Length: 596
Image (tube, rainbow, N blue to C red; front, side, top):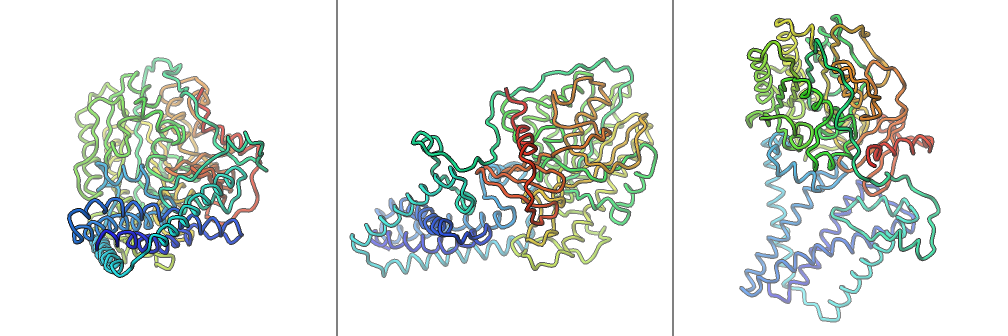
């Protein structure tokens, strides 16, 4: 391939990517009005051609080494970007967001093997896809050698691209200003999109939007108390937070979890039947549990290395921390916010299968119980990972048929039964670990003076909504946000069962009031309530990496980072009744409540 063939190669590359990118629009939904169609066409051409040109620019320097070097460079760069496009399509088809900075940090971070579980079959299929991409790119390079374009045609093609590029940017600027759904809703269809926004300039020119969209209020400086009004505790209770990754609420039953189901029938064990996490991801779930604030505050607390009051109060009262997580606590960066003040923090278990790491964490906590000073209260946190990786000992498989999940092969027609059984087996394993810890506490006579809270960071969907959602971090339905909560309140009169709605935001206020006897209003540091406070929660905040949501009764109103919105019910069913605007406004204020 000679230098004169590079531009035909770029055009062919853009054509292939454009056709492939139609699958993103299919997932996102086509808009068939005039504005929607025009935006789709210009967006597709204008955006994909930019990256095709980038391939050409990256390959061009190799033309000085000869035509063979240029062809190899073109094939390699084209294959690289095509592979990224395929990876992004897999992520987008499952989670409805693109591979961004947050996802890359997890993919490349120290916990990548803990978070992303790939079977041998999945690696094999991925290898075959890469080989197919290399073959395709080689074919494009070979075909481009037989295409000769005159300067007039080249300039015409560049002119068409420039018109498309300017058109879709202008349309988006106007569509965002006027909140035209068929335009603004399409931005998330393609990756790495940064179209023009001109709201301020359009207002300067005298234009006014027809209606104002819901928008999260702008941030200011963080306003979070450094301490609370809490007396010196004479007989402090120990605290144990037991967290299970990807634990669905419907798994707390005698069939899947017989041991914990037996425990909840005992005195001072309370089951919260309608408990919701603060998000559909680990970061959102754990952050909301400790801070009683949504994930939108993550960057500020992480940048300041500011721990939650729940941890600070425990350390101020002389509690000995006992933090035992199976997965890495530095990915997401919990070591830089939640546990930033914990000395000699145990980052995680040794690399290995999830269930083995879980056992190591449980054994570590039991060793702590054996060696701790009896007169020093402890603040314990155990975080197990087996259900996230569908992991369990091979010889312990009560639910069959069970099959390793392969996300590449999943579709809306896939039978979830073998994957669900695989998941149940992992939860069955977790049931044994919880029973082991509770039994150990009881044998050491520690259960009688330890507040225990057992819950999950988020749920786990296995296409329950029949819209090809598998896993989590893709919607805010009950399947991905409804988690179990079992509480042991020593010395406190508590019901056996609580049926009103509670959330992760209620956990920190509960511990601070029950254990540390803090008298400050919860609104000073939290958006939650005490768990035993039956006051109705008018709305619930969900936060993910790409979206935030407000849940009011059975309506979930979702906002993307692009200021687009949609709504659905707790099982992803369509909802046409718009919630009261005053309640939506009140809920959105929560995102900036703790900023000056």
